[in-house]
Amino acid sequence: MGEILSLEGIVPRVARLKAEGRRIAFANGHFDLLHVGHLRYLRAAKQEGDLLVVAINDDESVALLKGEGRPIAPEQERAELVAALEPVDLVVIFKGDSPGPLMDRLQPDIHCKGPDYGTPDRVPEYEVVRRYGGDTRLVGDPKDHSTTDLIEKIRRLPD
Image 1 (cartoon, rainbow, N blue to C red):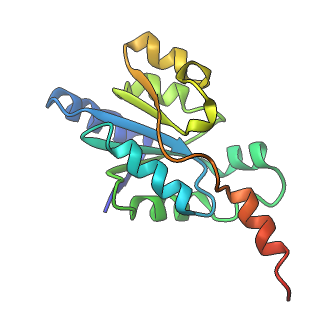
Image 2 (image 1 turned 180 degrees about the horizontal axis):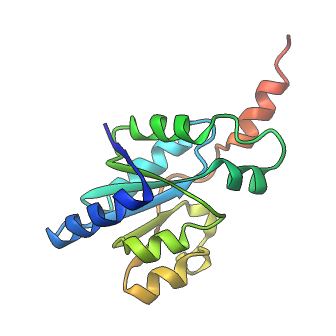
């Protein structure tokens, strides 16, 4: 089971792991209602490194990015669920719409995003990762699953 760390706790932990020669893969997202697409993404991300760090958007940023009624689950519960997934080693909750500032501090070796970006250079944090010498990779299966679609499917269920 993965460990949930604060922002203050994850920076020295990742620095120590990197100093030990461990290759750090990094994934991020809202993870509002977990579905198989999330699991496949995280499994593929884990294959890119020795350890997988997952950054989860805080409640405020999910609400701003996804709209009214989101997130469905509060950030601490989302973090706990993601930490329980077998590919995940460390989890951190971050503020803001981009994990770029966190990534700049952690400098993971590989930033993993889903294939819906098309090419790595279209990932918003691509330049952050390139600047410190990391690599951006697209991993996971095609984006055939989404929390928004799952919510809509649930809403259409008969009472």
